[in-house]
Image (cartoon, rainbow, N blue to C red; front, side):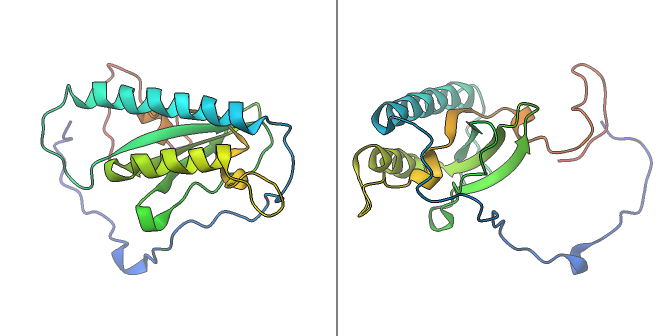
Length: 176
């Protein structure tokens, strides 16, 4: 909704130094969360399949024009008091989009997965389920062991402002 006012915008382009997010290295490798890897991986694969299907349903209602790289935003939730898992695969375009901590202590984050990399993410969960490293620990354990759920992201999943989302139906001026 345009405001009708002409305002000069502050330009910060010359002060920006873009760097990819690097999570703090707080995950203790080999820390056992007591998960049965095979069942946990099956649950994560089911969650992802539902998220992919939900995204297809939503995107089929939109017009066919895509701006930028086509992909899906997937929300994940960890067990309480677990560090942020590293779900970035920058060479594949899979990247962290947002992260927050729930009142219960769970990490809730959103990743962007390009359409061409859905099978890659599914394959990594398959490896977590079936492959073991030299120590006998599951492959990609640090990435997936603490994750409780995957689900299709909503606009609220990407909202990082301290202020609450604008109320539905109330005209609000905001910028994306």
